Each structure stands twice: as structure tokens, then as C-alpha cells.
Length: 230
Image (tube, rainbow, N blue to C red; front, side, top):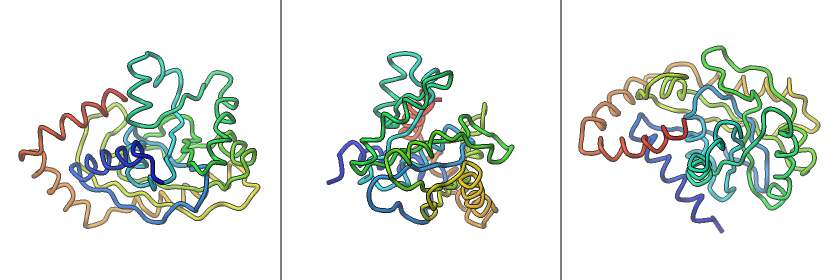
């Protein structure tokens, strides 16, 4: 049974991304729990994954504790709109991850950005090992996911633009998997998606039309919530 909160989050972010240029998904998560590892170039990556991943997996997003959970109001917004859970970056982060092992065994998807920070335009950075340790502890597969278009949609330190967002879900990686192998799988998916397509121009025109229509105000409200997370 799909939890209502996961269904509502997916509907919210699918709606928001549809209005800002569209979202495409390729592939599906395997049945049961899994650790999703993805590239990270924008705060919009979370929205893209919540819109693209199956709500039956009730995705939980690992978020930097020193930023997203630095205040009570930001913590509440992160948990409710992004299904976020805190991961410390200055010691104790592995314990935070391993605490999700039971959730994985129960069939949930735990989404992590192993680069640890947004990479911007520099490509996919090196991966930390924590996501792989968690998958091994919970005995669930690691699934690579490539995301493209979010860096144009919401650039690092930039404003919101229209852009088609693409999410490609790869095949589960063989176990055991090294950080280098996981990074290579994600980088390959990202590189394949990141090539421009004719749909990008169509998406920009569609988004511009929507933003100047009666949907402009509701969209602004949705992205106001998103900006409180970024």
C-alpha cells in the first residue's frame, strides 16, 4: 500500500516540474528496499527524484544536518516536503546512515548524494563510501541514478529557469561495489541524459507560456516552498 504522504509528495513535485519544463523518467526501481545513489548539481535534484521515483518505495532523502536541520522550521519543511532525514557531515554521518537499515529492510528506498555537496558544472565528483556500507549492512541493492537538467533549472547560487529535467534509473549494481564503480555508473547515466534534445526548446517555450498564465501565481507559491529548502 502506498503511503499517502509519499503519493502527495510525488504529485506536488511532478506538478511543479511539469510547469517549469517537464520531467522525464527512464527505468524503474527494483522491488523491495534499495539505496539510490545519484549525482548532485542542484537543490532541484531532490524534487526531480521525488517526482520520478515510485511512491510505493516511500523514498527518504539524506540531507546535510548542519544545513537542512539547522533550525526547527527548516527541519519540519525538509521532513514534510522532501522526506528528508539528517546526515552529519562533521562526524557521526555513518551512524546516521546505518540507522536507516531497518527502513531499507522494510522495503523503503533511501536516496543519497554520495558526492556530499552540489557539484555545479564540474561534473560528477568522487563518491563517499557511506551509501555502499549502508546497502551492505541492510543487504539491499545499490541503484545508480543519473539526473540532468536540474543545474539549468535551479543553478547553484542562481535563480529558477525553465528546463526539462531527466531522470534515468539504472540497473542495480553487483555487490560488493566500490565508490569508484558506483560513481562511474552514475556518471554514465548522467552523461547520456545531459546531451541537448529538441524537447528542451519546446519545454522552455511551454514553461514561459505557463509562467505568464493563470498558473503563474500557484507555481510561484510552490516554488516559494522549494526555495525555503534552498
